[in-house]
Each structure stands twice: as C-alpha cells, then as structure tokens.
Length: 283
Image (cartoon, helix red, strand yellow):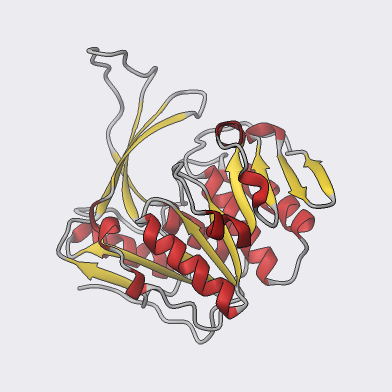
C-alpha cells in the first residue's frame, strides 16, 4: 500500500531525488582494495530532493516534492516518511524502476562518503513538473538535468523564484544560470566553476564557517554557530530547504541565509539526512 499526502496550498515546489539511505558507521574509510568492518546498516529516508522538501516543511513552508520512486518497499517507506513530515507527495510518480539508493559511510568526525544509485530518480521527466501557485522552486541535480532546466525555465515564465543547489556538480546552461536567485554552491564547487556568478545571486556554503551571500551589491559573510557534529549527511539539503522556506515567506536573501545556517548547524547534531520518524522496510 502506498501513501500520498496532499496539501491545500503549496509555497515551495522541490524538484529532486528521493532515496533510501543505507548508512554504515566506520572507524575510517577503506583504501583501494581494503576491507573495513562497520556497524549494522541503518536504513533512513534520504535523497537531496526529499531532504530539502522535509527541511522546508519543518521550517514552516507548505511543500510539494516532484520526484519518482519505485513500486517497492523502499518507495513506500519514502512516501510514508515524506507524508509524516507534511510534504505533499501527489507529484511523486511511482515507476517500475527500483527506488534510488544511497550507500553512505560515516566516520567518527561526522564526515561522510556517499555513492548514489539513482534508480527511479532517472525516470523523472519534464512532464512531471508542475509548479502550481508556488512562490519558490528548488531543484538539485540527482535527477535529469533536462528536467531541472525545464523547471527553472517554467519558473522564470511564471514569476516563481528559482533556486538550484548545484549538487552533485553538473553544467547548467547560461540561460538557466541567469535566472537563479540564488544558485547555491559549496566552496569547492565555486572554485571549480568559473563564471557561476552570472546568476542573480549566489550563496557559497562554507561548512562550519558559514556562508557567503553574493549579490550585485557585494559579498557578505554569514558565520555559523559552533556545534559538535555527529553526522554531516544532508547538511547542505537542510540549508537549502530552510533557505527556500524563508524566501517563500518574504525574507530577504541575507536573513534567509542566516536562518538556513542555524538550521543546518542543528541538523548535523543528529544521525541521518532526516530525523527518522517511520520504521525502515522490514521493521
């Protein structure tokens, strides 16, 4: 049995992935050809799109996810998890391809390494995109780039504020970049992508140091509170979702970034990309 949740209104539409995260804690990452023993596997809800949608919902926005999951227990698990967080899942399509999976190792310092098997996320099409009366579109790049660029173009035509988290890194067209407000990149992506600042605004996330907000008026550094990190998985998604929620409420970019940094800092003090609220498959 699949679960769907429908909201009467939508502030934020998220176009992105939904994955089941298979998480193993390790003392250290293995070198090439090496085997390292880890903890029991934890199955948690994840995917950049789903993580962002949940974060936006927990920051008070009415949120709809445009995505795809498989017709399998992982898909049911993710839809139930999204619904429990208050995310509208009526735009999440069920397909025959298996639900996307992310294989995550976490070391004692809270840092992670991730391998993503896209699965059903790759089945998302331009026809799936529906922005309705949303104020903000958020997209990330674990779904086909053509779908993201279509969604951004639709947002630009409809007067919807378009935000893209450039993760994982991919090349976007100049037309797409030109309307983003903001483009969100981390500091490594910013160094690797000359010319990314052709967007209307850019937020460069700096991890524990905070973020830089780059606008035509200049650059402003917003510091982050100091916390004891347990697991940094999904911190960037938490930031993006919180940012989108505050932009949808009318906050300016600096104020929205301040809120997003504080929320992301809290997010790394617990395990998983989303606080688990439903049992994983088979439990």
